[in-house]
Length: 398
Image (tube, rainbow, N blue to C red; front, top):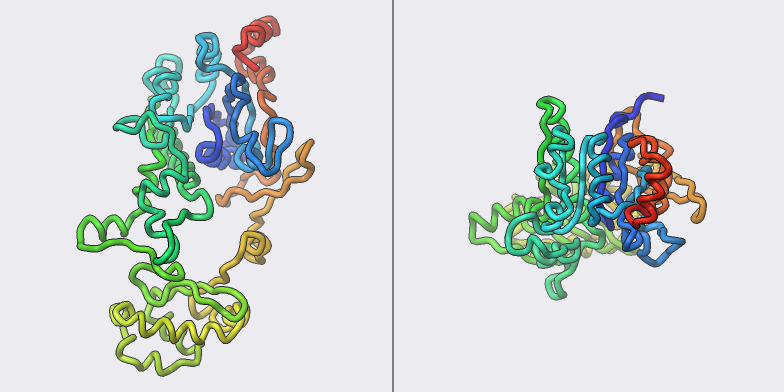
């Protein structure tokens, strides 16, 4: 078996719940030693206790974000806990946190606080609103940021209330963005010998993904609105259509796809209609076009339309989650991995999307709270048994 691409990389992760652990799990899946620092005073990562399925200070929710990591139970609010943490920093490459924006400084998680301990260390903070500004000290979560950054205003039906994306898209995007920032910092430290701070926030990540919506809004008299059947804001047809037994989504972002669509629909008169000749025409006359398309799509099942359209027109079934996980293309991509757990048995999980030689194909379960505390303090820091017992008696480690 080839060497894992991130073997030898050690990251201290002061993170909990979703965004941060999601990002650092990708590093663990690629072979990094991710040491999860958990506060013994609050029972560790709160994700351990998220319903509906729970175990003893553990849950499938926690398992979904933390496989392949090691756990050290350590009180960073105590001076002795800070001393242990700095010893770990000496033998690590990066420090990652996803705390409130005011906490990296208070907990000594910044490059300024740690550069004397390890000049090469890269300190990455994934905060809710950033480390500066009027809301820096407030907690932020995916739900809040989807509303704050305008996402809910463009999600849902036009006559319905604002809606959120069904999955935690901002959390996950923030985790990915933070890992890009962390790896950029590590690359530069490898060249220069000097670490740095890297700052990423959920709000900044969400605003950056407004992308062309932002450009249109900032530079033109354009207002983003909710669209019927999840339609694209300007391309027609590019949306969901009801079929005889479900839904299908098509995306005609080229004139070729439009011509192939009307041919597959058996509607040559639409191709010849001057009202629908160009992108601009179809958008202008969408209220005349879309009912005709809907009337065609509802005559056949989703499977029948996929058979007619695949390979000609970009299309997909609108699956539920169970259908998506069972899809032949998903299974062909080996996206489901099995992880053995002493309490939950064999857990089936979704793997990292990064494909490369040496990736971890048989990951270990997420750790029990503080499972590796003694091992890491002995092996990495050469702490004696008496030192470990003193720290435990003082409540510094769990």
